[in-house]
Image 1 (tube, rainbow, N blue to C red):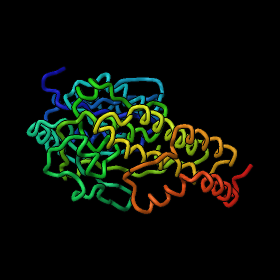
Image 2: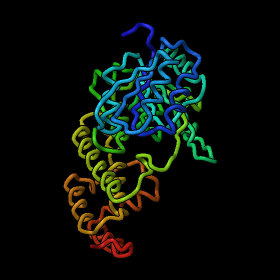
Image 3: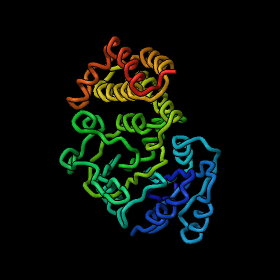
Image 4: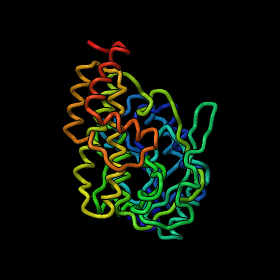
Length: 331
């Protein structure tokens, strides 16, 4: 590793031509030397002019590293970028988002000062005409150094992989990676990562700008995307129920968040606008995975009540038929 390389910023790129320059320039508008951080651009088989834009930016900024791969999705691109990273810390950035100017130095100074494994920070939700703060700082461990176990036990955990920087050696040592071929991958990744975090804190600085746009992975709708979401929750539930078997204190806490994820999966299927025969088939897959066995969790009171109803087989199967009739989705 280059001795002065403090952080590797990994940016997967796929068909983000209107946004990529804003993203990269925000990463370069930082008040630390370029040799202290690298921007790893992972070309995930983009089909637009994104890479042409990046190549022009590379003429301006020597710390941009461009690597190429066949299209495999966001998880695959992040995992691939990790192989090339040299920084002590890792920061995952989505290519349609951007960070605040001169924020990187503050993040790194705090991380080194406190010898942190992970530093979490605040962010903004960005819409074309609206900007809203992400976390309520009063519900985060500001000015407290805690473990990942304490975090998932006492706080409403952040999900997205871009709301923190984390030490690369922890990720590599414990072989933590994103499940490939799915969406919602951050839920599984962050819960896995926190298991090995001994020193973390939350800094109430607005570092990241999460841009809501039509056509992104999280906002895309339609039959295929709905099925992809359902199958992704099935993969996440299968992975987590295999990993967390209640054998230690962290796993006991993690299972409560796994139960949240089970609810997200069965709730997503319940309201999915897909043909009834497919919905019943996906129901059986979730049932086989134990998704309807939901114990202690961190759901809100309203969701706890909904969860109780959805976990009753007679209710679930009866009402998905009613819902399908109501939405005219029976084939």
